[in-house]
Length: 635
Image (cartoon, rainbow, N blue to C red; front, top):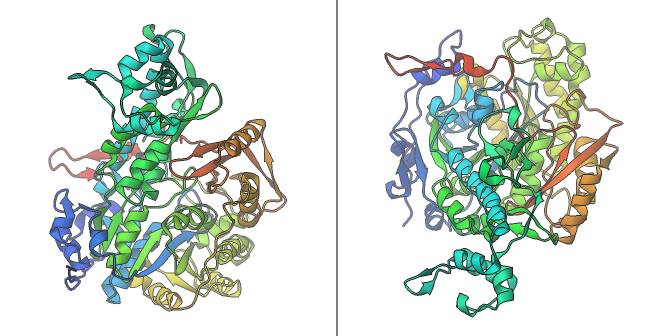
């Protein structure tokens, strides 16, 4: 039976001038019990798993109850190419939701990613929004939350340990010894778990009794014969640690002769994170985890997590992480927090499951893609929407005067250092020179057939003439609307014009289309993205990338979509090329396969999959008041 949502009761902001720090605002906020937030959205108590009074996991059974309810409107929030400080995309996402829900009386839900500990303690900071447009409690949001990233780290590294252990044990055992160890007898019968049944099916061995296997079948089933030089599965850690980018494993006394070079990625770049974000059910996640390719055997065939026998255990570690976490904004509107892949080294979007649940419960669902339209938004359309089958109604493109001045040739913007005077004083000419970056991003969104609303995130130092210039240029370049927002200082009230514009645009027809067809060859898909999205003249491939393309085509992975891993600080692969650069070529140095997640990801230029800490990381300021237990210094 369907549940009727309770009337929504907004939380009234107690704004102060000047605006306090994000943490001070969040800690002074009035939080509704999360059960009330859920009931107002139409969730039942038996569909929740409470993690204290302010957050709860949402069980996937709700999708079955609401399967016949029509979906709400679906809006993606993206941005222009940002400065290293970020341009307030999450702040605008939250402000828009607060405007729709707390001020315009619409049933709204926000879907965003969980931030990584890497940037939280590094340069960028958290991802809860800012000012009076935040997700709360922000300490929980930016740190452990409900443990999803820890589960991903545990599952990923369990697989890594399984790889090296298997190589070691196969080297020191006969075929018969491997069979006896992998199919041990228990109470007279041999253990034959699902993972081994699936491996037998893959190899065409249909016998239900392991004792009936021929010696050749025993060898094929029990020997993976992984090539240590072709292992592609690295380890992960959710800390920015540049010294782990390249490591050598297997140097213990008992592992002599098995040393090999590998490395660590940041946990949110794990393929398991991508699987979490793209899975559509527990069954789908189990299948995707098993399909993840960890390397090649000595014949050049793919070896998967299912072959290793570890996929079931990884699913057990991930089963609770599959449920989205429900939180709230400062004005009491509901927020689903789920998954956390970076958009520069992964696909950069929150989960399909969170979006699907939200679309059944709300009239408007605001989801957010990482970084710019060339990054998370392109991947939202070409990867996430392709898997989910969901079609967006509108794109909100966030821009700032500050970033456009940087793209116009302004001095370098460095986190932790004061801004140059050109960024806080009116300079229309510098701003005008940076507009091509904004106009390029508008064109990117329009290539997918989706109407665009530009949200000019206004700062106190922006002049009315500067804000008006950005708004007029947006309209002249094909945006359906362009409005100035003050949601950082005013909360939802500061995004009312944006909310009204989004509602109008969602009622207009759209003609969504993908950028490329999956049947196109790998190179053609890469070059379409490089040309149509980045504005490149062409693509150059390293010998390693050429070899990967040949291997992936032979293995049948050439029909997967493409997830480009590149800098977020430029439309190109080079972070120093600002504005809307032309006359450049994209260098592809390597390509990795995320077969379980369902995409290939080329590494462009010097893009690193493990960030590094700056000289003065953000963790310097983070501490705790020992008398009260209150967190301090977290933004």
